Length: 215
Ligand code: SF4
Image (cartoon, rainbow, N blue to C red; front, side, top):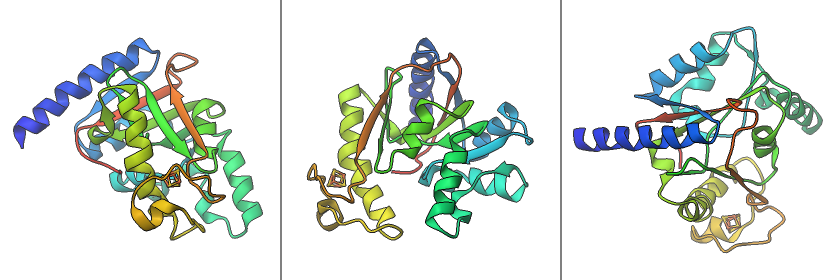
């Protein structure tokens, strides 16, 4: 166990250097408590916070922390109508801080994300003043191709299953667990985004956690 932890720490620190060469800020987090500490250090409670759907944000307790401590959050889960939800999602694109995870990360410091609706990757590309990507070491893959493969064949079918309890999702992967490269109207894989640089420098902050979080 200790060997795995030490090896993962070395891997994360190597990937941090790769992110820094690509104009990202990147940080090592020992555990989920460290994630909350780092976010509170890098932001101000008076700033606005929004987020994309993410099991990692739930598992680290970050979302709960911000809500319980009365941070200024824009939470689309509070919407009671589709119109209100859309309004909150659009407000989230103008937030000071946007929180999300990544579906996969390459050793060379590239982010890979897949969206059905596109609001999460829209915020990653442009809008919020700062973006914080929180990801467990389990999201790191050797090459960009490996990262895309992970996002498409591992993360996406599980995420399709996850969101099927909330949205109508009728895709082959729901039934088989295997991506069939579907063209379903309810596919959660409309957009695949590779983020190879942070622009402006330091806008995207990556927090890599020494543990497994999300899918
Ligand atoms: S089957 Fe469709 S929804 Fe499921 S992972 Fe593949 S492309 Fe995405």
